[in-house]
Every structure is written in C-alpha cells, then in structure tokens.
Image (cartoon, rainbow over all chains, first blue to last red; front, side):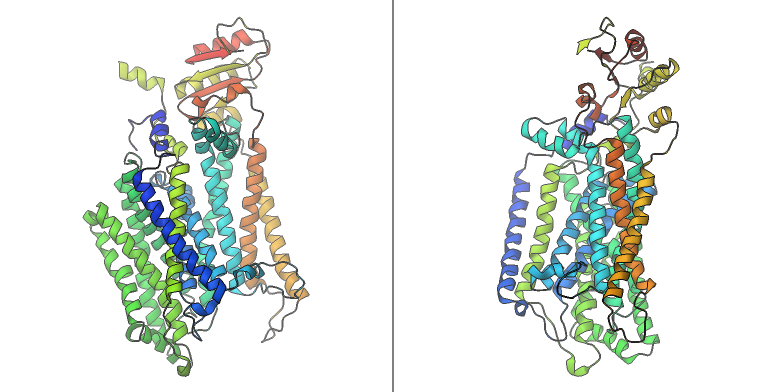
Length: 444
Length: 178
C-alpha cells in the first residue's frame, strides 16, 4: 500500500464506486438477470413436470445438480481462507482483496444451497433434510454423510456470514457518515451504532480473532465433509481416503481462481489500483499453483491406487474415464486443471491482466468438469456392466446451471454497489498513521 | 457545542479532535497522569497503543462467551444425535452400536464451531454495547470514522478547565465543550 495515501483519501476512493451505477454495471446486471430468468424458467418447468425433465437415467441419479453444488461450495472456500487463515498468519496481502473474496464466499454458498432443493425435485419438501422431532416417524440419520453435509454447509454459511458482517460494521459506519437522508438511516441501522470508541474496538478485535480462529478449521472441514458424500459410498471411483485433502485442495484452487476472475475487472472498472495491486493477484496465482500441484498429484495418486489395489471394478472405472464415453470430460479436466495453469509458472503470465484472467476462467471450467467427471462417470460405470449407461445433461439442467452463475453474479453486482468492496478500516491499518512527529521532521 | 476556552459550566461534555495519533496518545497519557478518568477515545482504526494505555493488556471477556458456546454447542449436538438414534433405533447391519462416537464427531465439531461463533457474536454485541442507540452526541462525530482521532468526556465533572488545558496542550486541533 502506498505511504502517500491518507485516511481521508482511502474513505473517498473506496466509497466512490458506491451508489452510482455505470453503463457497464447496468449491462452486466441485465446479462445476469437474463441468465437468472433462464434458470428460473427451467426450474419452474422442472417443478411442474418433475425430475423427469432432468437427464437422470438409472443408475445415474446424481448429475449436473450435485456437480454444480460441489462446484459452488468449492468456490466458497477461498473467501474464508483469505479472510480467516491469512488474518491469523498476518499476511499483509489479504487486506486489499479479502472483503470481495468474503462476499464471493457468501454468494457462492447461497448458490450452492439452492442445489439440494433443486436436486430433490420436490423442493417444497426439502425441509425434510433438517433434524427435528416430527409426526412422520422419520428421524434423520446422523451417521449419513448427507446429514453431515447439511450441518457442515449450514455452519459454514452462518459463520462466514457473521464473520463477513462483523468485518463490515466499521466500514458501514464510515459509509453512514458520508451519506444523507434515507440512505444514511439505512446504513445507520446496519452500523449498529458503531463509532469507533475504545470499548468497541477492544472487544471487536478480540471477537474478530475468535471468528477467524473458528472459521479456519471450517475451511478445511467443509469440503472434507462434502467429499465424504462420495467417499463413504462403495461406488468405484469414489471410495477413497484420498478424497478429503484432494477436495480441499481443489476447492482452494477453484476459489482463488474465481477471486482472480472477479477482482481483476473490479480493480480496473472501479480504479482501485492503489489498493489492489498486481502482487495481490500474483499471490493468488501462487496459491493456485500450489493447490493445483496437489490436485495434479491427487489425480495421479487415484490412478496409482486404483491400479495397485488390483480391484477390477475400481480400475475399470478409472480406465473408462480415459478411454470410455466420458473421455472428453476427463481430457477437459486434465487440460484445464493440470496443463494450462502451468503457464502461471512464468512470472510474465501471472502478472499480466489477460494471463491471469483467462487462466483463472479456464481453471473454473476445469474444476466444474472435475466434479462432473467424478460424479457422472462413476455412477454410469459401476459394478454391473448391464447397468452401464451414458448420462448427458438436458437443456433444463444446463439452463439451471446458467441460472446459478447468473444468481451468483447478480448478488456480487449488487454487493459492489451497496457495500465497500475493499476493507476501509483495514486498509488504513496498513498505512503509517498520521504523526505530528513526521510532519515536523518533513518541515525541517 | 460551543468553542473552547474553558468558561463553561463544570459537568458539561468535552470533545477533543486530533489529526495525529501521537498527539492523541500524549493526551491520554497526560489525562491519566493527572488522574482524570471516564473519557472515551475514538479512532477510525484499532490501535494497540490505545488499548494498552486504557486497559493495560487485560484481555476482553468475549473469550469466555466463545468457550461457553463451544462447550454447550458440542454437547447439545452430540446429545441430539445420540438421543435421536437411541429413540429411533435403526437396524444396522454388522452389530454396530446405535450411539457411535466417530460418525457423531462430525456434527459435534460443526455444532461446537457454530455455537462458539454465535456466542462470540452475542459477547461482542454485549461488551461493545451494540446496537448503540443512546451514545452521547459528541461521540457521533463523522470525522472519527474518517481521518481523525478523538477524546470525549460525556461529563467533565469539576475539572473542566484542567481537562481542556490538557487536551489543548497535547496537540488537539479542536476542543469544544457544551
């Protein structure tokens, strides 16, 4: 952060993009709302006609919806990793990007949370997933990974949202003090009467540290639990102890890539170059290179174990992924996740706008296909050859997938217009405080 | 608010605005040296120096809320899982126990984190006094969330002149009372 910045300038710069939508913002919002309408219509058709409109084909009853659920939960990992783990390790490069990354986490988990309801078909009965005493004599099974998943994702969402909101309070107070009329009243309500008193800061900083410490194990646990949705089943291609670290690495890989995809345009459009530098993106790219390395190793490890186990069903599934009908899914996954990200090992690529932007999009495409590869190809090629099928998504499923991206981007676009997308108070903390001593020394 | 110089009635509020952190710290030091307490320090950012001077490194009691929430949450969720399975005994092949610790640890862990976080939130709101609806008007100066620091006395007591003198001599750019 530049030492020439002043506290007042930080307030001005970061609040400048608020409230006044530009043509570019309107254009993106129109695009997002169109996608949302497509998704809404497709879901409406499914609600009326039932799950038959999805491409489910026995024995493949997990397809695009579960793939997309896992994809969005994975995207949600980077925000809390950046805001919590990098806070505890006092990494200074988190400051410029953590607010938008946290917001991304919340919106990604909100998107993921739609999919269990979409996937069960009868969305109005999705509340059956929650454990409570009821009259149907149906008690939830706490030994099921699906039940663990409900707890893991809802806990992650709740804790991340609280962490996000608490981080925002001092900045909302700053916005309140720079607005008037009804807008000020709205921000005043959200600021909860924050004025930066010694008492408020004292307990705030203690609580913030605790939130970070509590959110940290969640970063590692949520995708581990999601991976158990698969690993606890005996289906070939799923039943592996490798899954938790493999999924967590993949989640951080895709999450950091999505942060790059979102924050590069944000930096340029809102002219936040003084706060979000190329070295922020370079650090994110390095995190992707590290987790991408783990992921590539995991892909190799899976194949080694499948071969070494001498289990024909396991090995058969893994061979089928490469040479069977799903070869194109496997190839897309490997090219997008293992090969193209290697370009970031060149400093020139990982410090250029297009190099960062394009590779980050490629990674996210690859990570969606990774989940599709795990889910669809395993179910379509299970134990019994008579039950081998080829599942392909229908237009309804693809429409809902498009709608999920639109839902996510709609929330993000609203966020950047109503909340400071860079943390004002924390940016100020990184600056040298205004000292009379400095001014006197400069005058001499 | 009337502008200073120290002719106001004892007991009225005093507000000092600082542009520099070192002057603010000097002001706090001088007030403490004179044995004057019961003032509020305002800052746009958290500063450990302020915390150290006012609270002498005493940790925030929020931590007890976190601990209590974690213990309560973990116990409750484990009990929920155990009682659910004891109350509705499912036929499980292999003679596995109904109340089995390893699979219940997952939800116990999640419950511990969730309740510890919620209790931390309650502790934060309680000790910070949030939502704060009845703060003194002198505290609600928009400059304190922007680029200024401040010291506010809601009631200056009988030492108004002395307080104003200390605040001005420590380098406050503005001292008002009323």
